[in-house]
Image (cartoon, rainbow, N blue to C red; front, top):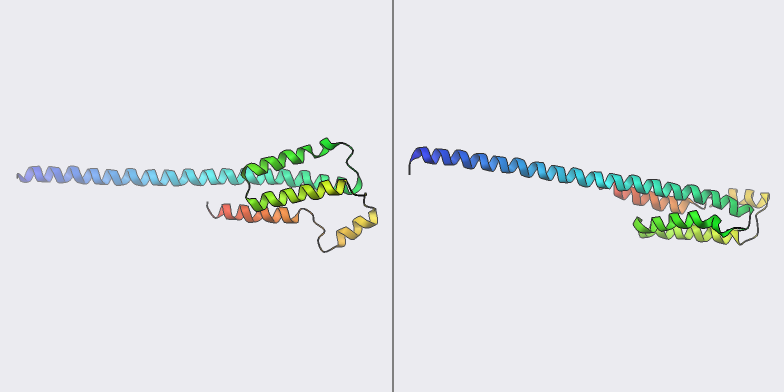
Length: 148
């Protein structure tokens, strides 16, 4: 075989292997970046959704302490948020959201709390009805951040 041909073939094959490695590296890097961006976007979306649920729940908890349920549509925004949570949340987050909604609904059908009863509730060992939901969200979001 001609040495010129061998040299030319070696050059072409070396360029081909080097180019393939560059393409493969770029593809893997881009795929990893895309996956990270998708996780970040999902994280932001869930943080926003959980924040909306917490805001609405806080309003309704306080309202339920002082009022009975006069208009059932009062609970509609919370049910809508719960069903949005149901689409993407982990089972522990969903369970805590359902538990919180049940607690709010039950409070609406209970007797209204007096100012003294509210004071006692605030001083009790577990004054925050939203705490369990918030903690479940924190655990879920922390595990998602570990994937970024």
